[in-house]
Length: 341
Image (tube, rainbow, N blue to C red; front, side, top):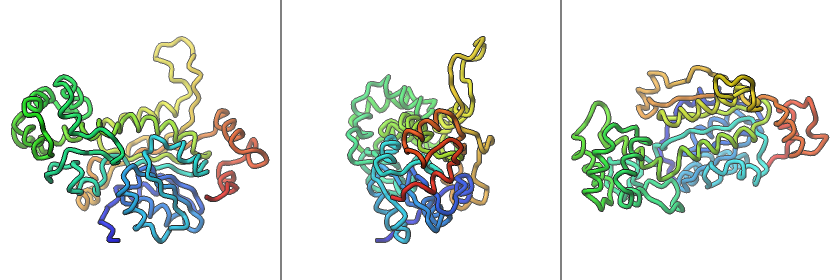
């Protein structure tokens, strides 16, 4: 099988952020072309293990071919990472040393002619990560009210001309293909504005809505905490402000003991910090990487590590009977004692 070219973003920075170690266990929640996974497996060899998840069955096929040399150390699952905890528990793959999310659209999907992610190719307005999903971008475009379309494009696309675009879409319906939609948007707001095509933000908004990307991210981040061993790393690469805002707020909230609203006389939330921020300043690609891979220019990497809490220790005691887990056992030792899949 010919493996398409795929350039993983912030590759060395990701491996360093995960603190990849020999014999470690890692979860790649957005497998894509397998670039990050290959680097993680190489760095954790010998004995490293990786669970790779992707909602796109084509990505699973491509990654399987790319990672063939590591076939004894990987388990690839065609699922959405919104089910992260259930997937890991099903395959007896927890706790782990690190979890990676490389969000957004992969270059493999963007370059695919028939998926409808890009207006560079004329294709049906699909935009589903998985063919098992029921709702397509065409369904949203052709059945939503003008007000709902405008709100969706404004919130998910951060588009200032959302009302004009929604009005023209409704007037031109039915719209079935990517070029039809792009042309309709150009009619609504004119031709190019600055560096990006006028349809870019609307296409982003539709893709996010079709795949419930923001809701799934929020749910998966919460699940990730319970799967990390002590000092386990959570690494997230995001590509637009909506994703990065969710990740930043989540990590900052989970790194604080009290999350009561400002001005509360005394703490009533009973919240306990479960994460410690590793890079308080976001990591972005170097100018050299952006020059080689322009699609990396908007990438932002954030990292946090799991810290010991009484809740976490209780969870581990319930999950794994003594003598494997006891007070004072470090996460690295616990992971070494866990059965390989």
